[in-house]
Length: 175
Ligand code: NI
Image (cartoon, rainbow, N blue to C red; front, side, top):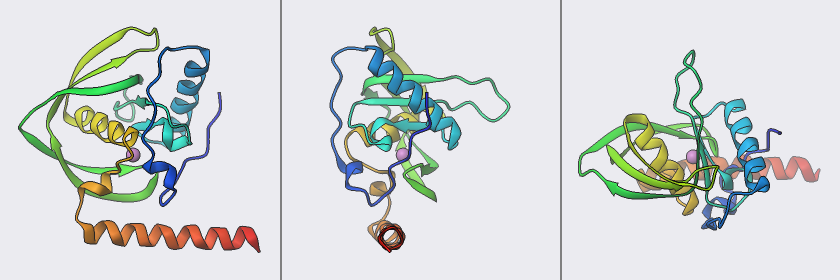
């Protein structure tokens, strides 16, 4: 197991559509282990495989609070089956957009279908923070970021800031 480097905006890989998996094999289980390790190390409550540069439809989540027992959830090929009309607002962040937080409105409850680590199909109903987190991570599999749900003005501002930082890092590396 190892902590993998995170892919940060404006890296174009974050805009890729990730590929579905046909089966869960040792390679997938090793990927999931690395994702949990990377997510807990950050720390974060959710991670999509593309955030460590792997364009496969794999998500890890753990919304347990600090001090609570860990409740790791790994979802392969997750899909939203139903979403409530009722909406809720959470302040979201993303490990690919460090230290940036904004309110995002999403369906308050969703039903999610996915394959578990044993290759079995599962369905869960999520509400509260878990509902938001699942939707945020599934967005990643489709190349969508939470900043796509905020105003263009705010989005342009944050992308510009991170683009500048990336350019400075490139210059330093090249010097
Ligand atoms: Ni994210």
